[in-house]
Image 1 (cartoon, one colour):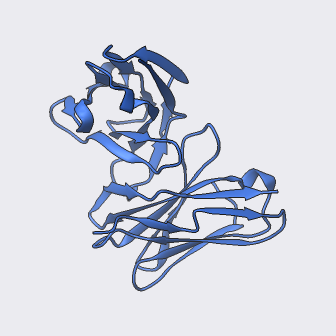
Image 2: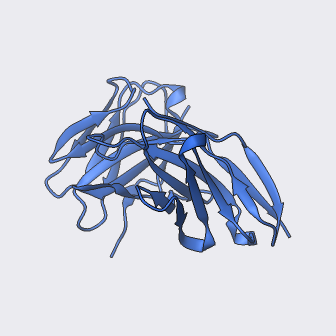
Length: 115
Length: 113
């Protein structure tokens, strides 16, 4: 069974600073990989996904993530954080084959942005 | 185009009671998945419905059951509520053949007292 680890429970950055949120997964092959964002009281919004091909994927709101097979990682990055990026971020994996879209999520990383 | 909608927004129930949560998928979607998100945790997969049948299930007891209607909307039922069932319940919809393009609703916050 697949699993996801987000080592950082809470990260604080200053507005305009760069950001990297870590995600490590455990799966027997290359999974499908996702990053979602959740604002307080809201559902989940997909930021970006990796299925195959180029290991650097671009998403919405200026986010990008890089799949590194050797490190079983899929870290999320943003070069310059805006105050509106404050939210909780979830990394998720999906199994290839006949899993029909079942997602396994990490515990999340809460991002606080200081002005 | 309305996205995924869920009702009610909030719900308070007493231990031992039963609850029904509802979800309407995004237009054009035929598959509905349910997730439980406890406070401070990531969402956990409960089950998925397609063609009015449960297609796969996560590690949840039989107290959790569901239904999908011909119009693709879905219900999540929880019997014999426990305090530990307090959580945000999220519904996600997708299209067959595009299972990982999931759209999430805003969730239903269930509090069990």
